[in-house]
Every structure is written in C-alpha cells, then in structure tokens.
Image (cartoon, rainbow, N blue to C red; front, side, top):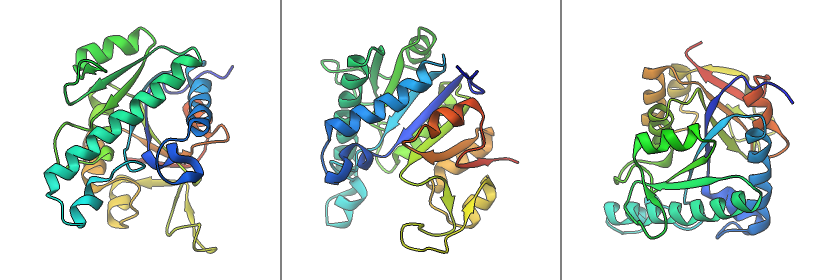
Length: 238
C-alpha cells in the first residue's frame, strides 16, 4: 500500500458525475463506483472531506438565468447538494466507511449542522466528512465552498475529480488539438480564464497556498494524486 503524500484532503465532485450517463438525477451504480474510488484513498489512511455540487438536480445560476430570483435559486441548489450528500453517505457506509453529513443549512433530522470543530473531530476519528448545502449563503458556488472548507478543515490539498485527466487550454472533448497543463500557478489559472474553479475559489486558495489537483474521477487517479504521483494538473504557488 503506497504511503500517502497528503494526510488530509478535500475531494470536490460535480453533481453531474453522480448522474452517470443519465445526465440528471442520481445513478446508484455510478455512485457506487465513485465510492469505490474514494475507498481506495481511505484505505491508505488518508482523512477525507467531500464537497459535492448539485447540478444533476438543480443549478442555482441556471434557474436565475431563466427568471428566478437569484437567492431563491441558489438556496434550491444548496438543497440539491444535500440530496447528493445523503446518496454518497449511504453508499460509502454500505461499503464499510463511516461518514457524517454536515450541512451549512440546519436540518437536524437528516444531518448535522456544520460546526468546524465537530468536523475536525470526525476527521480525526476516521470518518468521511461530507459538507453539504454550500456555504449556506447565496451567490457562492460549491467551488468556493470547497476552497473554504479545505482551509477550515486544515486539508493538505484539494482534489477536483472530473471527466478529463487535467486542465486543458480548451475543451479536449471538442478540440483534438487541446493542450494539457501539467502545472499551473494560481495567477496563470486566473489570467487564462481556464474555468477549473471560479475566481473566488482560486483567490482563496492562492491567499492560503493550498494546492489544487485536477484529475480523472475514475481509473485510480485520485489515489495516485494522494500518493504524490504526477497525475492530472497541479495548481499551486509554484
């Protein structure tokens, strides 16, 4: 078993990845496969927090664009992340990994409120902490939530798992000549408008020098990234 380079990480997942090929909703087989990938990291002894988007159910920005009041749309998006968090929690526990869902919006019947010290204690006890409901505030994305929680929970790195194997200068699924970056600085990422995370999130991690690793969701890349292997794209202060 490889020795992890990072003792504690925050894994950021898009909501869309939970839908699998269906594009919308939650596909149990896909969630199961994601949890197996997570399990390979937990088996190394790495502590993990998760932030999951809600775009497979409802995306606040899209709702706002279609005429909804932005705050209301964002709150709906936050509730969607709670559904995803509960789905991942259920599957992880079926695979034998203890978890806690901590929500920025109080809903005590289904999950705990997010309290930083409580979340840290759960991590120290080997539980996966799934952070739900964003920051609890409209106008903030789950990318920003990942940056915020990553710093609050003293994580060594943020890993953003996607459908592609890193950051490219343009969409590799549409452009055969897309060029992959192995390393980027925070400022380069912002200047190039690469869209890996929103500008607020990048600015937060830059100010606190928290590295971001962008890699594939499947194929063992998350485990290799945690082990310190050169995989995906590393965004750091360089």
